[in-house]
Length: 284
Image (cartoon, rainbow, N blue to C red; front, side, top):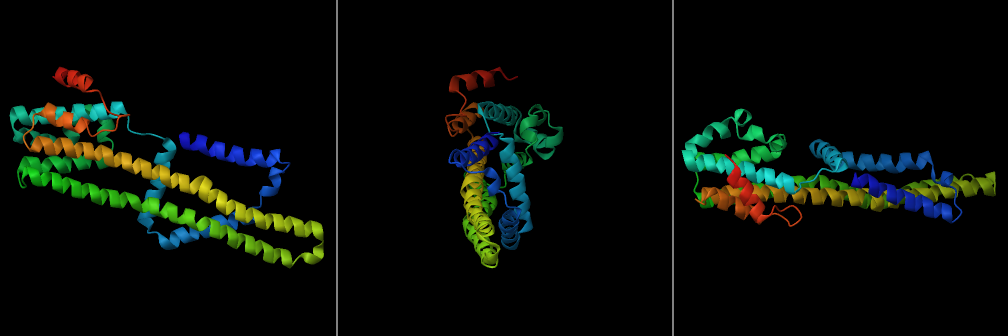
């Protein structure tokens, strides 16, 4: 939603200011310039970017347009779920966790939190973090290192679509110049048509330059920055899981492991300590 509001402000400011100066918005619409600039940009993207990254770019664009972000409630749900999982392991032994971890789809605990389980990336990350705790194949101190390495790999993978968006944003002003040069070439071949025809073609050529810069700095670059912020928020959410799971693996009490994880959450999403403790202690 905020992306659409931002785009509306950008367009309104650009067109509104142009009209206030006496300009006619109709002269900015030249389909040929759109075809050249957006077509070249799409071709550059196809040449430089693997198909998997392009699909992820589309997915991230859809998520960004949806505007859904983690909130205090989503972190509260996470910590309630982690506390329940840890309490089962503490009271009944780690073997009792096996049925939940090996078959999360039929887990009575995980099924209580569909908002979390519907995100397969986060669910898989938690399950992969709990499995070594249950089977005891690695030491507790090694688990945190393992999960941190997985976090780094996920962050690297998430950066590829952002880099692709930034590459297109950097290329668009130059592509706009290409469109403008093509327009000037077309203009020079029409000098004999008179001043009005020449003026119209020069205006179209200049529109190409404007369009390349406008789409780059008014749309694609801000979008890349927004997606980067979303990726950082996803990384922070996963890091909260790492902190809680590694703390529990080291022998911390469930409520202590969750409390340490709570302190890693940014202030705008962080549940209150007393509020969280009250809710956790009320869980049966």
